[in-house]
Structures are given as C-alpha cells and as structure tokens.
Image (cartoon, rainbow, N blue to C red; front, side, top):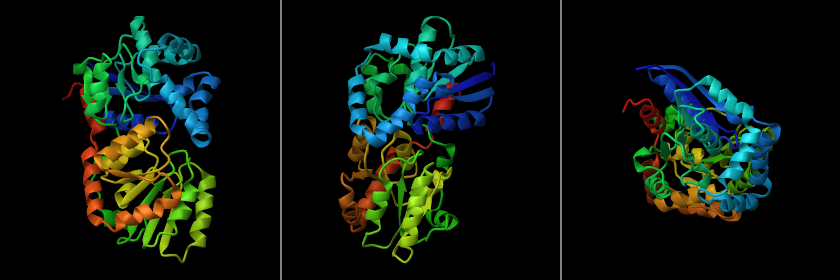
Length: 375
C-alpha cells in the first residue's frame, strides 16, 4: 500500500476547529504508513478581508452582538441553497489556498471547517483535484453550511446528525458516528486527587472550572464575582485563554478574596485543559463543540452559560436532553443553581454518568483509522 500524504484543514474562526484538526494530526502521527501530515489554517492563505471576516468579525459578534450571529446562523441554514453565490465569493478570496492544495497533492484530506470542504468539493467536481475531502463536523447539530456534494466521508457527533445528513442526500454508507475529535490525551485515565495535587489545588474541595474559551471571551469576571458568594467551601479554576486583561482582572479578585473560603485560581492560556478538566467537578462554560466534547470525554458535567445563538444553543439542547448539564440563564442565580447540585449528590453522580455516556475520547482514532482503511 502506498504511503499517505495527509492534509488536515481548519479555519481559525474560534479555537475549536483548530483544536479538532490538531487532534487529528496527532492521531495520524501515531499511525503507520504516513510520509507527511500537515495542518493548514486556510485563512492564512486567503485575502485579508476574508480572513478578518471569518476570525475577528466572528469574535466581535460573539462579544458585542450574539443575537445578530444567531440571526445569521438561522438565515444561512437553508440546505443546498445559495451555493453558487457562496462559491463565487469564497473562490474570489481563496485563490492562493486552492493553488497550494493542488500543488501539495494530498492523498487524504480531512476538513474540520466547512469552508475548505466546500471549496475543495468544487475542485473535485471540476476534476482539478483527485481526492475528495472528508468532512469532520465539529458541532452536535449539522448546519447547512457543512453540506457538500463531493466528499469521501462524513464524520459526525451522534445518530441524530447521521439521520439529518441522510435526509439531506448524503449517502448513509459514507456517514460515520465518530464523535468530535479531541486530543488523544483525553483517552488517558487520570486520578482526580493526584491531578489536583499536581496542579496545586486542594484535593478534597468541590472544584469549579470556568472556561472563557481559547480567546478569553464572555462575562467571566461577573461570573467569578457571583461564584465568590457561594455559601459552600469550593475552589475555582478560571481559564482565561489568551486574554491577559482577563487574567489581570481575576488575579486582582483572587487577591481581594485571599482569605475567603472560596479560593480562586486564575490560569492563563494553557495546553493542559485535560488535566484541569480531570481535576474539576463541574465546568461552567459556553457549549462550544470542542470544549463540550472534551468535557464529556472526561465525564465532566457542565453548567451552560451564555451559549451563542445558533450552533451553541443546539449543542446546549443535546447536553440538557442527555442530563449531562444544567443551564443558567442569569448570572444572579448561578450560586443558587450550584447549591441545588451540591445539596443533591445523587444528581451529580447521574450527570457524571450521562457525560461519560456522551463522551467519545477515541473519536480522533476512529476517524483516522477509517481514513487509513485500518479498521
């Protein structure tokens, strides 16, 4: 069998698509028969306007106008419509990217974002690319933007997504319920007490993890201030992402409450999310596809806050239906909802079990083995 040249494609519109691609690259590297595996963020090979629209504008909408993002999500969720207009706009801005892919001549292509998948499907249709892209959907539901007519495989989170894809005309024999790929480190079992000790946390205290996401967005400061009034001994691990401003704000709060029974541990950008999740009892976060998949892989229940209208609202629905999460719609009642959980240990046990049932820590391995025909 000929050795493979692997191309994994993402787009840095939020951190999740990139993390999913990184997970696949790590898994490809563990397998044999691979001469070269590369991960490209396609936005690095497009026009500045296009890159800005996909990355900075997306984050600005999350922070300043999430309702507008939800309206845009619903407006564009029209299967197989407006594809010609979309193709014209994206091809105009992505010419260097398409040329670079053709020159690389990959034998396997996996896309963790819908835009490169859509563009490459058009190259296949025009017979300018011999390899059809495989599509790795990084949310629990399937938006119409993920639909392409030329593809090798579809990998999705759950059976519901598979049913939807089938109804949209995707061949069922090409759809695999794999889960969303997370870093292979999430497959490693870690003792909670030992992990807390390693991270400088108390071993026997209820541990709340608050995540601002990779880019440090959302009203995290307000959430932390509310948690500091919790009438129960606890420690809070606050992941600030790349936001140095947020880290400085939380360091100040931690100093002000240094004698409180609630201990705050602000953490800047980290590559040890798996360990912090292994140490935590509950995660307070927006339900992004990757963050949620990582939490479920660790059996970590969630308290959903501030889901972005659209895909994160739909992710939230799946979590709540499964019993792996609660939802808090107002910061002012956050401590009340957490106290309800603390007063009901059996419910916490059930939530952890539900999270483990949803978790797919082996998703990257399942996808890679399928693509390499090793299964």
